[in-house]
Image (cartoon, rainbow, N blue to C red; front, side):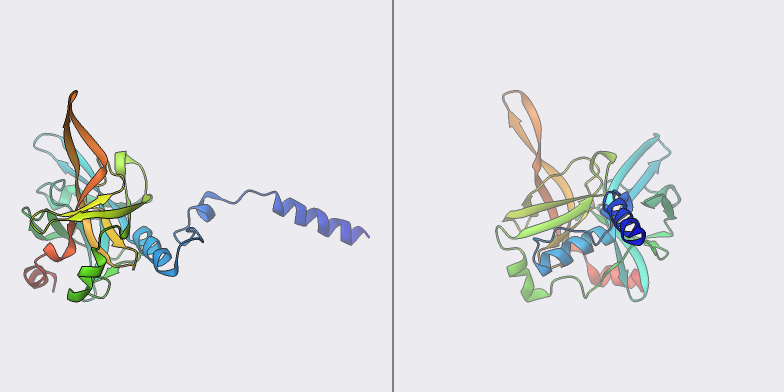
Amino acid sequence: LVVIISGAYISTKKSLTFPSEQEIDAIENVAKILSPGEKAAVIRSRASAVRIVSADLTDGGISSMSGTYITYNGQYFILTASHGVYSACRFTQIIVGDEIHECKEYVFRDKQSDYIIIRIDEIVERTPIRIPQDIPRRNEWITELATQNKTYYTGFPNNGGPYTFEGKIVAYSESEAIFIDSYGWSGSSGAGVFSADGNLIGWVMALEVGETYFGRQVLENFMWVIPLFKIDWPAANTFMD
C-alpha cells in the first residue's frame, strides 16, 4: 500500500511540474494541425534563422537584421538583405541565442537586388538550408508563387525573437518582388521566406508605405519579398567555391 501511494504521489507531482522554456521553445515543437509539408517548412525556417548585427563606425550606426544560414559545397554562409550590412566584415556579427559568430568575409553583394552572402564557420546550433537542394527548380516556381499560397518566415522584428510568422502570397511582379500578407517590422529585413512545401523562396526586403490623410504610414502586414532566383548564382558561386 505504501508503494502504491508513493508511486501515485510521484506521478501527480510530475504532472503538476510545468515544462521548461527550452522544451516549449524547442525548434521541433510546432503546431500539430499543420500538414507534414507545413510542419517541415516551419521547422526549417526556425532551424536556419539567425540575427545579424552590423556596426558602422563612421557614424556610430548599428543595424539589427534577420538572415538565413545556408550551406553550399561543404561551406557555410549567411544570406540576408544588403541594405543593413555595413562595409566592414569585422564589425558584423551573427547571433544565435547567446552565441556570437564572427563574419569571415563578404562573399558577394548585390545592392540592386538587395542581398549579401556572408561566409562564416559552421553553426552547430542551427541547421543550414542546402543550396541548391532546398530551393525550387525552374518549373516549380509557378506553383510556389501562386496567389494565396502559404508562406512562413522566422525573424527578429523590433529587436525581439526569433518569431515565426505565417503569411500568404497576394501578388507577384517580375520587376519588383513577391508581395506577402504577413507581419514585419524593423529587424525583419533579410529573413528567409519559405513556401508551404519547405523550399526557401526569398528574403524579406521591405514593408509597404502608404499615403494617408494623416501622412505616410507603414503597412506592417504588406511585405516585399525578393525571390531567390534574383540571386546571380553563377557569379556568387565563383566566390563561394
